[in-house]
Amino acid sequence: MGESLVSFKELLQSWRASAAAPRTARSYAVRLPVDEAAQLAALADMFPGRAPEQLITELLTAALKEVAAAMPYVAGERVISTDEQGDPVYEDVGPTPRFIELSRTHRRKLEARRAPPARARSRAGAREKPRGRPRSQPRTRS
Image 1 (cartoon, rainbow, N blue to C red):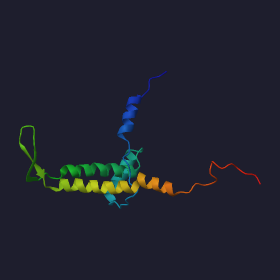
Image 2: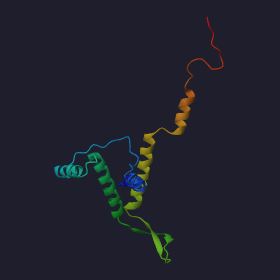
Image 3: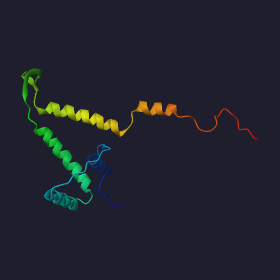
């Protein structure tokens, strides 16, 4: 038996690394500028295992992470903790806290649209009338 080119451990790591995050039910249609569309097509040619939509999703994910990281920290007046050296850590009054809170709010709304809550499903099931004859009644012949 020949040696396997990829170990199961490497295969699992690859699957874990490329696992898709949960998707929204809503889709977003965009019209790209010509240069960006050409670059996207070039990436799709270079990476034939990735659909253009996957590339857009991954690029947007990376860009949003960079945007969040680039938001400036603006020290407020309120001390919220101390660091390892005992120096005060001031509340961030810049755009980051608002961005995080708005992102959480929108995430909850998007997740709520994906699936009905368990309570609603159980209530809906309780209202359904059973079909056919009840099991306790024997069949009668006429």
